[in-house]
Image 1: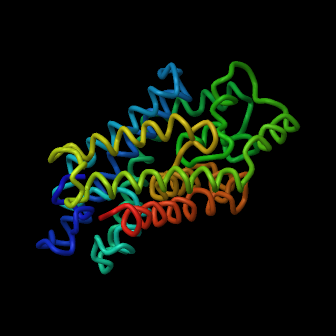
Image 2: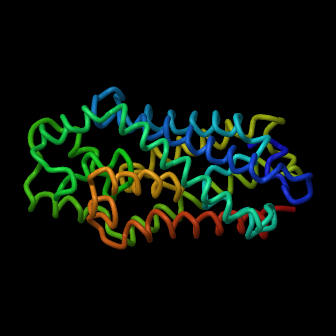
Length: 291
């Protein structure tokens, strides 16, 4: 997020026209999801990524690129949790919040549609290999390319052979409980917000040189994904989850996408928890660490 972004005290600066800012947020979130979820598609469906770090660093680079593309226009929030945290702690005009949230969701939804068009045959082939029906039990092993699930079903999806038995699947789900998943998403987003607020604070003498904040934010996301993705797929961004999840609902996954196999868990883990975590991380910086 460049130094003239919303994260650097957007209210005190001449505001970018709302339409331009919303378009920038939609484009930035589109790029984030296209590259990030694109890496998930290639890893799950083609085995193109050899390890978690490869997927994580793609997400990090996606954030950097999105921030450089739209940061000077909208502040490059590209995340409803960050928009809400910035507004809650006085760094962003609250009147713009609803417009930003809708724009972010739209950008994520369109990116998911593009990926579905590009990877449609691979999605079908994986479902045939695993002997599952899209929208039926176990089809989160392909739906995970869009919305997120806990525990991460990647190990089941990429394994050779048919899908595991229903009993084994139920046992697998016990590895990460809903409270554990909520805690992971709150903590991860807390750390992310803490870094965002620190590296974009003009009064912080330790912040990166002008123009380098997106690099540190992107690397932070990559590190967080490396730790939390095996548990929850590492969301930290409600638009990144709900936009693609909503698309998957209409693209044939139905109840496996919304509400998903964990019921209300998708809402508490991937929407509420990141918002709470971002608010806490921002508050920690603003009220305790900032001088």
